Length: 253
Ligand code: COA
Image (cartoon, rainbow, N blue to C red):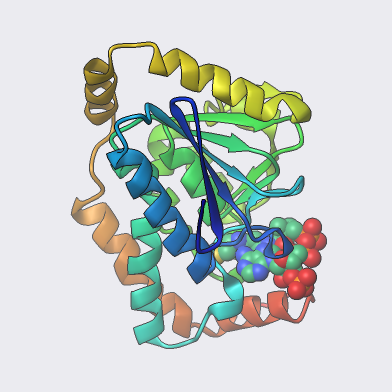
């Protein structure tokens, strides 16, 4: 089954959800965003499904983040962008069943955020993690709210203010990843965990998830949303985004 740019397959009691626009490194295009919304809603309401795996099509990328090719430098666009994208990034948290991110390659920006919003992250040893938005003059809207509780304030600031990628093993050392596995065993290991979760009492599993996860809200998220229109109008941001599109290094003021 396919929803827009996302493949959906039921394998025993697990929904396998594959982001499928590998030529754009599975960046969060409108088709990936709407497909993910539909796929996770379907998995959540299907009583046969007990766990969900999200992965990326192709060998190279899980998800390269927001679709930079669609960015427009207006406040209206920036407001709509952050609202729409935050809804998608929070999906794994807002799904009642356990979600495993099987990270097969780049998990950058929004891809990193989908991974950390998942309940468990299993990473191929080829995976790379990062929040490189600073290179575009932007900030990772969901990660600035959630990352500090996962890795501590200093490391969260380092990752989002320096923006360099880290390896799967470094991500595991930081507690962002549960297990690093051989690339060709990634899905098998993810299904193993899904089956383990499926064998447990489902009511208790769902309560465990809802107890650990807190809804996004409050001052943190308001701040993350408010900051985005200002950034989109900043000259350095426009230079960063334009430089990415023109495949050159940005020249920041
Ligand atoms: N949005 C839109 N398109 C993207 C994209 C994104 N976030 N990330 C990659 N792509 C596209 C590239 O433009 C390129 O398209 P093209 O073949 O039509 O030119 C294609 O995907 C392959 O990417 P490329 O940069 O050539 O691959 P690479 O292996 O050299 O580099 C990355 C991979 C992930 C390091 C690099 O693509 C990158 O930095 N992407 C942006 C990540 C980012 O900043 N995400 C946060 C966005 S807010």
